[in-house]
Image (cartoon, rainbow, N blue to C red):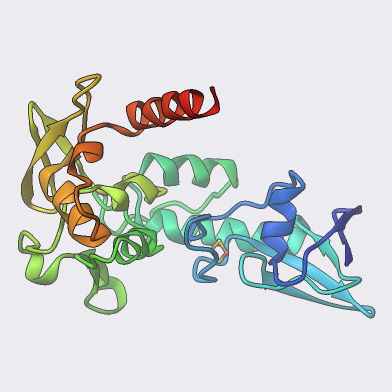
Length: 248
Ligand code: FES
């Protein structure tokens, strides 16, 4: 089906969202709570666009709104720019200590002063970290409390017994608010220390012991431990070498 985004005609696939169609064709729509691995959540509203069909227009979240034939999409209008400015302002108010939010605040020409509630806060509650943890099948963190006290935490703020220290939560966090400290062989995250395992080939510390044990347990293979002692880069090299040998 054909849709127009900012005057450019593009071929959209049934089932994809406006954001996915835009990304595929190189059109930028700003997002906060969206991640390719988890799709759209529709919670931050930063990806709002204007959609027009049969002469009537509405503003929708592009990360959850499915494409349909003949729609016209505008990614920037005075109304949308104002929505994004307000969101940037509110989220900056929540997380003023995040460099990411400070940049966003300036980029969107926010002018409101005296917004700070907690000058140390960096989290905007986008829930990407919670989704990342759940997608690993671990669910060591969740949102707790309500209203302005809402935050992401481990149960009772204790060192989570189920956490495997993979740091997927920190990798997807847009505002850099999840602290991961690595020193020597130790990674500290969510109030817990994990021993790091070094790649047998290049020596890079690439995973925690608990992470590898978890993968072994989940994979249910006979003996995957040997392969797991290699970091991603070295594992790819081994696979490439095997393929070369196989192809002669
Ligand atoms: Fe679409 Fe957050 S990116 S609502």
